[in-house]
Image (cartoon, rainbow, N blue to C red):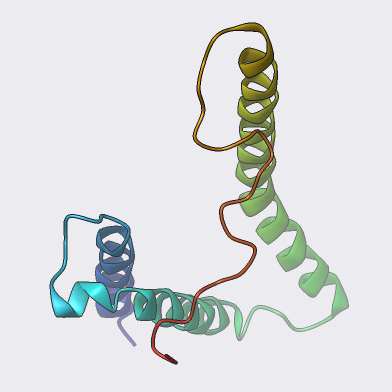
Length: 120
């Protein structure tokens, strides 16, 4: 099976998600871009399962798979976590010491939940 078509579909889904976050874009298909998230994750799960289906044969190969996934995903996750933490700490101290007016307080979330626009 050729996975290039699926990889292209994942790219298109990621593009729709990115365009969904731009407020200037208001086309119907892009305004429903959050469906791209569902499609992207479902397709990614299929591609990962397809690639590793014959490779995970025992517990040791399963642990090796988990190690590879962890080392691929978590360094970036931890980097971004600390980057956002440093930005928020800077924001907290800059607002106290400089005459800066911020629209959001430091460590104040904009939303605590995911809006499901298609339900309403």
